[in-house]
Image (tube, rainbow, N blue to C red; front, top):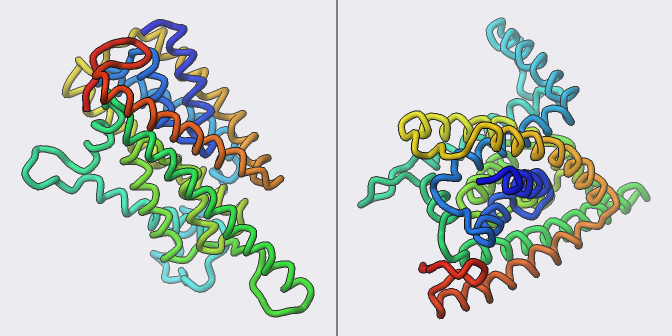
Length: 318
């Protein structure tokens, strides 16, 4: 892999990790087009995620710091018997619900009967496939989820408008999550982790909106939830790399360039996403993921029939 490849993949990772278009899906597509797909890039992919981790921490540093401080205060209250579930403030509620939302990730470690694989290994299989039919269909699923998110957000807004006029109805959306809300978001995050093409940020945002959460609060929850998720992925991949050094076949300068590019672009992507959500222009991402998904379904069908990668000419098979 060259520096140019690292820059391209860093840009793709930085943009797609936070924009609701699927970073894993676009990395799979980029590597498919450039002919750099394969197991040897798994470590590099995780390092790109580390770059976007830096971006989200930088953007949300005030919230992250307040959550860290509140966590220790909460632990103190638990041990002194002062903790009360019904009296949690916003930060404390977010901490508890983040923990609950992360619990479904344990499903990733369930063994698959009749194989030596765990559920999490399916993600590597799908992402490294020579033909991207799963990725293409998953991008279409992202488009559908984003559409549902727009619908429910509009419904929440209409209900809030009626409420402001003194009529019956709800609000513009809840500011805090319930246990059920957090579990729904956590289960969707598992699906996004397994299927390249399902946007983690887009799908978990959509589920939050479906559960009646305020769209900006749902987005903040989604981005902060990415921090432990990315850390866990980096740790697991790092352990795999220690066990199998062959997974690390890229030079250090290439890795550094990829990380820096993904961090800078990732920060800008968060700013862009929040603007699109605030101005109700999410339809752009609905159309984009649908178009790319359909295009790669057609490309995949052609590659299945010809047995060759349409871009590189290399042999390709399901």
